[in-house]
Length: 167
Image (tube, rainbow, N blue to C red):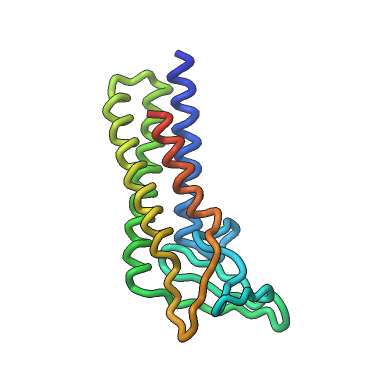
């Protein structure tokens, strides 16, 4: 009984992590830190007066000093494709984590099948997050621009770890 309750708790934690990661991917300028978030490095030099928030499908760059305006950032199509796969797998893994948690609380016989599906989706989401991390935020610019990883992408891996532990 205690193992099922712990599994349900971990599955709910995984669902929350996946939901937050998905929100950060789809709403990069929102209240949660996006997949890539922070002060950009342009040609090796960090700009402390600018902030960049990039999710799965583009992002926003803001002037934190001076005038304080924000503008949309264009990213490459490969970033959009990888972002779409990452967001889709995180969403699927989140839904399966919720179903696994509910099945664990109800002591359902379908729990084993859901556990395998949730673990498989979590592995796919973690792999998609790994690919997104490896490719990075490819900003369309004449200069080399780098952005630090944000909490949103880390939440994909935290959700995957919790979902696999819950299974």
